Image 1 (cartoon, rainbow, N blue to C red):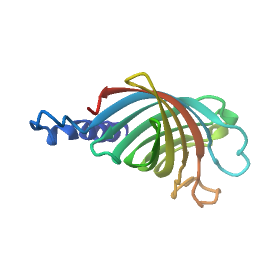
Image 2 (image 1 turned 90 degrees about the horizontal axis):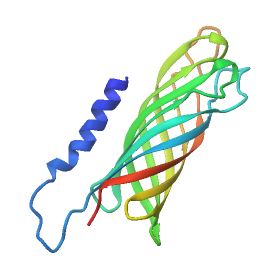
Image 3 (image 1 turned 180 degrees about the horizontal axis):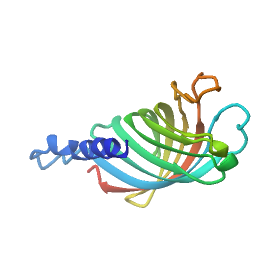
Length: 189
């Protein structure tokens, strides 16, 4: 699962090379790549009887923008702390994003990502890995030439969860907020 995420991330990071060609000297490149770290707090939407609390932990993200409004985003999160009864949750997601607004450098993005979600259920009930879909959005606040403060929200859908005997299989819907800082390693001209 992590290997698949890394392969997808590497593919997207190498995608700008496909468009690499000499551009006229008056225009410059149109792409940008940003990488960063984040802290997330999610309501895990666990099995019945264990819905209290939030899981919290660090994460990594990257954004690749090849066109002014369209791009791709990838995230990996490891929310290992504060879970009820030892509960933890991780996700590995990648997908397209679209810029909805830009105002004085602040930009708002809508995204729809897919990948894997992993949950360690409370009280050692078990661990499961699931297909995950995650619509959400980010607000990016630039400071300096290359740094960006990022606020995000996601509402994930894990349709095949929890898949544990004696618990209903109606899917899980974790949701939460992220706060991160990104560094633009390749910048639009």
